[in-house]
Amino acid sequence: MTLKKDFLWGGAVAAHQLEGGWNAGGKGVSVADVMTAGSNGVERKITDGVIEGENYPNHEAIDFYHRYKEDIALFDELGLNCFRTSIAWTRIFPNGDEAEPNEEGLQFYDDLFDECLKHGIEPVITLSHFELPYHLVTEYGGFRNRKLIDFFVHFSEVVMNRYKDKVKYWMTFNEINNQANYLRDFAPFTNSGLKFPEGASEKEREEMMYQAAHYELVASAKVVALGHKINPDFQIGCMIAMCPIYPATCKPEDMMASTVAMQRRYWFADVHVRGHYPSYLKAYFDRKEFKLDILDDDLKALEEGKVDYIGFSYYMSFAIKDHGKAPTFDYNEDKDLVKNEYVKASEWGWQIDPLGLRYAMNWFYERYEKPLFIVENGFGAVDEVEADGSIHDPYRVDYLKAHIEAMKNAVDYDGVDLMGYTPWGFIDLVSAGTGEMKKRYGVIYVDKDNEGNGTLERSKKDSFTWYQKVIATNGEEL
Ligand code: P53
Image (cartoon, rainbow, N blue to C red):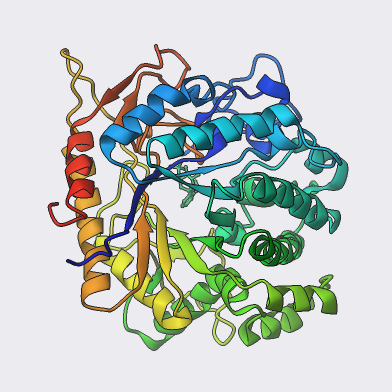
């Protein structure tokens, strides 16, 4: 048998993308609540607070807040033994800077986790998944402000204490490295609550991103150390968006460009896992003359809060060509990536590359020798509902099958230690990048369209039965 007996087969979501109930139970406004619906190729707008007349898809999402009991029964039928979701920070601390938590929010997650456990489903919890309280953006400037470290640690301490006997697997910041793409507004805002001043230069944006990421890494390390005190059985991981960046050819300059690009996107993992800044990044900070607030106490905290495992998402790979920047090979994710002519892409341009998952697992495991957990993987596609209500999605099964095969090969042939696999959005939900419903990942269909119309009824796609069998055979039958 390839995979461990206690392999974690699950599904992954995030609170803001499925719960809805955006102002129910005393919940405050989060960064996700001020993002409008975009579409394929059209970015979501970030508005100044919640403005009447705008379409905010996360406000209702798929109404999991009110329907979680029937949904979890369906997850049980699917055979999941774990369920990855996040705790919406604004349910617990509506503004983010209160001293006392909101009991109604805490109770909601007590009930939700009890319901999961009742069905033999283990919750896997992300503490911050694009859900920063919006108040922390307007009052403090988001994670550019050192005070956010304490707010995040306080929030984490409260929930880790409260759920210490219900949740064992935690992750701190979802896809903390998305913000390596600091020229776009989306990732700095969703990761860190950053809004750049009008006319900020590329260098200023970059410097601000590094400052925010530093505070997050310190906050994360403090939470790891604290969590281990609260319950020594806790497993606390990081969460990295892994899109390996291949050299477009074997031209030496392409290879070096790829090396530097990988450093700019994955240094976050180095700090999380090794507990210190890598030398290549220190050299880069010196050369760029960034003035970053990094204290000795911070470095000590990083050293004392190394993660237990590496959670990561994998959807696609990237490629890069020599772009004439030798010897620095300075790289910008928004400008310097090229198309990989050897692979196909989804309708949203995400390059489909199952072998890239095996490559990524090798890259992580060689480098860190820590257990890996694939906490997101999946295929965003448009689904058609037949007249009889059935949904045939062989493209989704093909995608998942090929990736699970690659994952098993990494375990079998390459000796990688893998904890589990939780495909993304296994119940249709609001897309993070575009705010669409139409970009569906689910094996469970939810009747709702981009404009917000629909009954919200759930139904099983063909991929449901397929995934059910995969789980039941521990991945032997694909
Ligand atoms: P959507 C970019 C690249 C890789 C993963 O994404 C990403 C993103 C951000 O769009 O996000 C993760 O919904 C994220 C989830 C998100 C999922 O991937 O844009 O952790 O919240 O929904 C899929 O198609």
